[in-house]
Length: 153
Image (tube, rainbow, N blue to C red; front, side, top):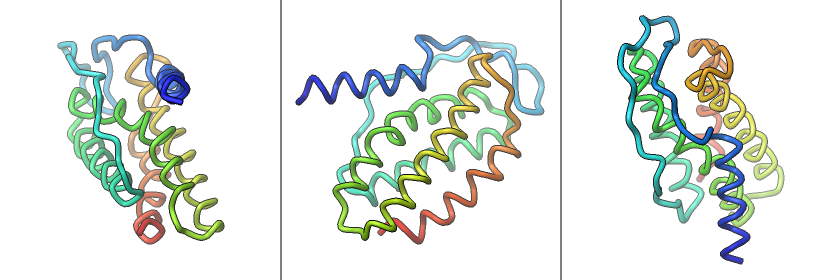
């Protein structure tokens, strides 16, 4: 079971994160960053409850939003990578284990997928695999985050 979990985790992260980070070369509506960025793609604390997982998501979103609004690509990048495992593994697993009704679980699953899609677009931008405009991405992310506040208890 541990091997299956580890394999699934590695596979999920591999699809979300490239094998290495290139130096930050562009910004969303900001001057080009002159220096590369160093960051750790290491371990993170796994949430034990759905509420704790949502708090981790909320904290990462706040950090990303603040950094992107300041055009600080380095500060936004690490939290994006942290979201990969959280959105693809932890939150779906915790949702299934929760005592929430099936309708709410279905809504949460759809929200995790939406957030994964939008944050993947931002990560792709950081790795020169696509274009992204934070303001446009956040038009989809912010309402989901707001709705989640009422769903996750």
